[in-house]
Length: 186
Figure (spheres, one colour):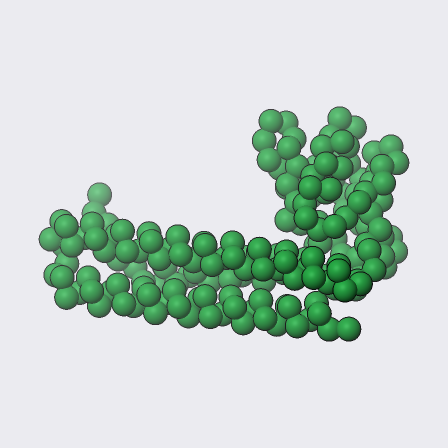
């Protein structure tokens, strides 16, 4: 199978990392409880890591309260543990198969915790973009080694991949700065 260099596909994959970051940051609500706050959480269920929304129903009965209705009674403790270990600063109260989660007031310490979580999400996105860059550069090296492209083209494509990477990282940093400003706003 012969490989081809596809810069638009690499850019699309980098934009996918940015879209994922925006989605994850959308879950970091600054004032109200939101079901999307729990979306990044995965639960160890049935021997594998499963998204929380595939083992429970998440609802928002009050502005500062989340309710998680677990479908399988045996998974209640796993869901509780996953939420506590999520670095979101949430502490669920278990009532049968329902977990109630009061969202804490956004004091200065809580805002700083949310900023740290946002930075972690942004770093994960940067790593994803770098993986895409590495994949593109690997394809170029293989094409050069197989004499499928001349060295000049390989160098030109390398710089195009680097420009696309730099642009994606700039966008990630801009999105992070915007979210950080939103979180720290009093």
